[in-house]
Image (cartoon, rainbow, N blue to C red; front, side):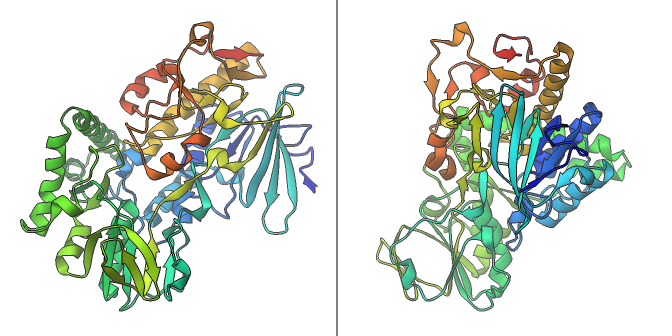
Length: 498
């Protein structure tokens, strides 16, 4: 076992003030706010992978791109100057610029996979045990505060259902999260199972080299089609307006439009559905069976709406290189997939674009004063803090808006909280239900009638609970939280300091 020496922060003699878990878009953004708002803070970022980027490092399938615009998915402090829908490589370049411009690299410790985190009220410290690289042994670190930025899904294993007779298939079954470097799809018959953003990205990028690609879906998904450009941004650049002004103007415009769309999805879902289908019909023609293949059974935004830049998915369908089948899998055969309708899809390669596994707090073993933590028995405070867990904040983003919008909001909150603790000479803070909350209804993390992606439906029992008051919920409403979170009273009775 390797212990950091007392010469560096993180040891028992000189613990870190803050330990950030994860060097993806949440961790890098959080570190920026920490160095700019509280520059004297001693901190480190622990990252399990060998480089930064999180999702954008894990996923390397052809054409990987954002399905949120980079004016809102990018940070508020770092202007985005490219096309609104960006490739994974472009996003990694953007993150690298943030790291370089703000001297964050010296704080990042790569190849550190956290195994356990133990809190002691006797010392008011977290003790972290991490596995360092391959054969690097264990590292023990201490920290006063944990900032969980590790995301919400398992980077090691993607979600693949167990279909009957998969072993009988003579071809390859691939999950996009683990794209093989040796996979050659030239002149292959490919079936992509799933119809979310991953499938919509993959299909137009692989179809030109394949003999044919079939998107096999159990039920349709909503797609939003549009140009991969923002007219006002182009106009402002022609006028030589400063990039930081363009970033802020376009950001506000997009957020205004997103708020309006989100509201309309509740108030007039049928009209929104027809508006989403109209441009698809224009590309595929009046005789295409939109009702079967592109008209979902749920209202818009009950699951995420995937953006299709420049209609590339539908152009692929129109060309004949790709097609859609809406059916259910009965079983695999040697040469493909047998469907419950009785039809058979021939395949050389099957790509299971079937999502991911929920990972709660990075699947780290948490212990609070000697007792194992059951995260599902806690109640969330605004989706950031949790009853009975001291000196810890988790960054969990938005479903209907860009994840990074909440990174900035939560970072402001954490920096304000840490400064407030310093002013009070407090070593410990946790949230607790107030007397007026004792009879509050305790509910599941999210209302699955409101939003129900597969990974949440499968894993919601692992998540903390919510109350029926706004303080004890992750409302998923950026347009309310942008005002509510900065206005949080840190001396409210929900916060208990020691």
